[in-house]
Amino acid sequence: MNLIKYFLIFSIIYFFNAFANHFQIRNSDNEILIKDYWYQKSRFFTELMDEKLLFLKPNSDQTAIGVHDNARSLVDSNINPLFTSVKEIHEKGLSASQLELDYWTGYFWPMARGSLGGRLSDMKFLKQGNWKKKMEYVKSNPPPTYVPKKTHLLSPSEKYELLIGDSANVLTSFMWRRGQETMDKHGQIFSWIGLCDGMAIAAINLPRPKKAVTLWSIDGKNQIKFYPEDIKALGTLLWTQGKFPLLIIGQRCDDSTLRVGPNGRYSQPECIDTNPGTFHLALANQIGRAKRSFLMDSVASWEIWNSPILGYEFKYFNPQTFDHSAPTGAIIPIGEFTNDKFPNTRSPNTAFVVGVEAKVNILKDRFPTFLDFEGPEHNASSTETFKYDLELDQNGNIIGGEWYTQEHPDFLWNAPKGIMAKGDFDDELKGNWDPKKELFPQTWVEPAIRSSKLGVVPHQIVKALFELSNQEGEGFNPN
Figure (cartoon, rainbow, N blue to C red):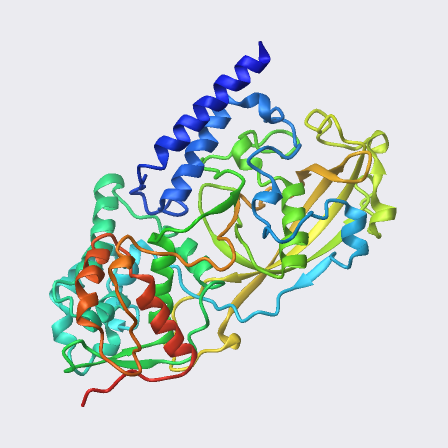
């Protein structure tokens, strides 16, 4: 009977997988993690498995690593097998690791400031009070009033439109329309809603823009100064609205009212993850071994603050006495853990427990600087400290854990190595564009504007601008 049940259920999954492959599912709410087919598909199947396949994972009250919370789903595929033993991780020198890569800091371009349509280098714009006043200011002072002497004060989307010859300002209109739709629906725009997801993943997948570059409008009449901040904004938008395969573990906590039990544990399962064991394994194997960052939503509540991880340091402690020591001295049998606040939610396979204090170094967003030159010294970073314990099986392998700090990562995610986000019409941009040698190609205008209608910039354009700034070049001067 059980075999028939399993066969029927997996047949249903196969059917829905085939069905989903023929339809692009797009989410219209800007605050959701990533608006693309792969994320929606993964969320669809997560919900299906949560509701229909509970026999495949432990009870949601238990802290064993679940089916949607496995580090193998996040860590680069060439890191195989994963190190899963606390002792092995420590003995391999992976109790601390710091990436030495030139990742950059960006801005999350909040909807409340017009997203990429906000003129954040224009003090008159910044002095406008709320979102509505900012939008009215832009309408009263259209881009042509800034040309030719004040083009440097235009928003990133307006500069882009001047570059490609979009006099209808399609991309900028998209930005403000999203804000209007949110205002109409909710009556307000939360200050944290923005493009932090795109900023975080663009920062680890696109080269640092090092200097401001001057390009000419498609008609060759007007100079446009793109600051590194403008270029980062366009990359941020690509990785927010574009499509790419998504690696994700954990579930989003989408509850504005967190319910806390007497032992300090959240009662909503989706607000408990990411499992501490998963988090520990992801840090050691992805940062420590693969030497490539991944992203975390660093708060457990419904707000989303995505940040790239730069490094970590583990300090182990005896969970009974809180005395720090090497893992061999900190690990204790579960039977000796008499002060355990979570005895009813331990994995039934737990044989040992060890405490961990993890200091995690992350890149933070910062307000745009609009500098002519940028370097690593302009990055914003911080260190977050998380305390938790790890549940170990008889062989010392990590199988779960409990959070000691209420504020902890919600979900972890990344894109596969070497992947570039893309827009719907990128395949229509034929040939190459070298901004050092020529103006923006006329044949690219139409697909670029069609992309703007969907709120995205083709990856070929983004790539060309990032490379020009990174190589400290200048745009082609037709005069």
